[in-house]
Image (cartoon, rainbow, N blue to C red; front, top):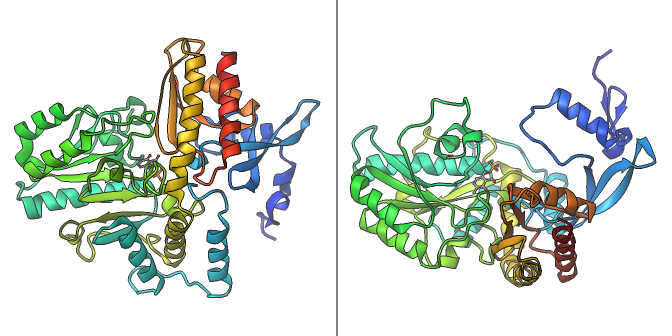
Length: 443
Ligand SMILES: Cc1ncc(COP(=O)(O)O)c(C=O)c1O
């Protein structure tokens, strides 16, 4: 007999007799601490169980009367998986498409060395929505950035004529592009780098939203610089929105110095900021961009690089690849993620609901001007930053919000990001803001 028995579904899912539905939040925590990596510190005393509606989750918390039991409560999802669930949890159109393709259309799983018919649907929709010539599918968000990095270097050598091994890629301080070795080499966050070196060479960083610094570097080393790779709005850094004319000037500088403008739209894309892609807010078009997160409709990791023919066209067979990038299920989900963004007018709703949220947050700021320093955002990518005082602790806010039935998470000690699903209703925005107001009042 096998010494590993796995059975059942949902709460009845059991592994060697341990039924998932019987575990208390403390027991879940113990398993994770003993058997998982220690690279996350999740909010304590809460375990997410299931979806109630597109912005509401059912969570389990310890039963105050019996430590061996749990109680269930509703939580408004104010983060939507770091903008991976822009279409709302379990978006019905996407779920129906997945079930239908798996069940009725007998969706195969094949690698890229043989063509499958769903790739065409994905490429047609992704090139149309991004208004780019070519699209290359990947899986995680970081892979879209990493592939952009490689393509920019190749362009530097093959098109710009940078001497072999001398290409420089420029980034912005405070960037976040993921956790691969190239991405952490690009980062200036010491925590993400400690003892992971040696790092990828050929990287230079300039302050974000500082045209002069970029111009100085381009003047000094422009002949070796292949690309400036940048987030249109820095999400992980705490929703840092650049000046309105920053990217116009950046785009002009890049053209002047024959340097590619590469944008990371992993977090800002798919309607999040009130436009399908955030670069549209600034009236510029990158030469190459990466998308991820909501590109997978909130249910599957799907990412892609989109860009100009003369840039993406430099890849040759064997130079790049990915087993699951654009495989049939990812192609179907990717196609439907785009369909829902367009049909449900997600960017428009992000604008409307984002306006409502920003208004509410600014009212809270006016009321507690001794606590909240700034409210920032575009569309439904928003954050508020508190003054740097001991009592004004972002983590305390996250824990307090949970007590008020809202899930959101600090990005830094004093900054809390709010980025709910783009399908969120007006009432839910008020509920979210109300919880923020109460928690801020209690600090
Ligand atoms: C701008 C940006 N790029 C890349 C990534 C990495 O995406 P993933 O975690 O899917 O690799 C993130 C994740 O937060 C991001 O915000």
